[in-house]
Image 1 (cartoon, rainbow, N blue to C red):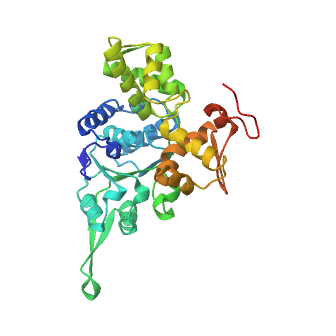
Image 2: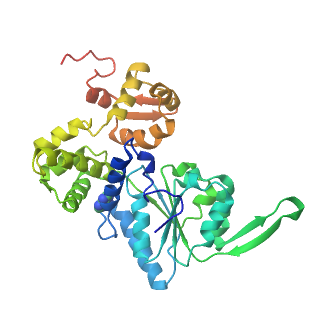
Image 3: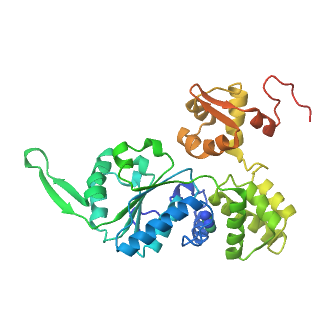
Length: 351
Ligand code: ADE
């Protein structure tokens, strides 16, 4: 695997580095080590896995590169993992980069010209590509060539550069931000959805085996139920519960211990973390339950609005804790109940 961005780990997780680099390195490396390496090992997303299996098998039988693929969906659901699995299944190399890392056309031309036939180029956060870079991708994806312009003004020369038949895999949390010409050049488009608790329970049991910790069914279920439908979160919580078990209980995880450890992590019974709860209580207390625009919530929380839109809101919307209307975000009675607030127009509940 080639990393074209200087990113230490090929999962776009570098931005999650906490303040203690050594600890973060361990965490990110651990997350990477727990990922499935083949479609057969992959748990969940059955329709996506089936479509990829067919695409890979057909391309291999023809001796061709698989068509360009776009993965979209909330963070942590397996977009990067699937890109790497496809390279493994196609028995080819993968070059990993991201939209923001490709600043100039020369960056993308350099990478494209180094790809061998069948190679995978993975571009994470593809919705953040610079427009001039994106334009180079159109002919690269469609005709496997780029026209590189050297020089300026009257002396500018267009140098056509043929490329090998490669596969572009793009990943985005915001398919709606992709331009139509780019979106249309992907032959296979897959939406990744939140995982069911049963699937996350299997992910946790598989990871526990790899981590060599003992976990019973009900504890795995407890962690799964608090993982926001997201394998990356499930594996992170498992590692924190594992740490707790290692210190307190000879590495054996039971339900009581799991609940203690999860409470210590600030994860509540619905899987909401500190930022989720702050988001909801901000709408409730500062904006009278809404409707309120996301920029106003972001300003109150001193948080980037894209974090709220990409990371926080998708799960809260899925849970029915918040609704989005043309006039803004509005909190629901379900969320009020979860946070211990009275329903709209109701009385304060005395605990
Ligand atoms: N680890 C993280 N995501 C996984 C998945 N979808 N299947 C198996 N193990 C995983």
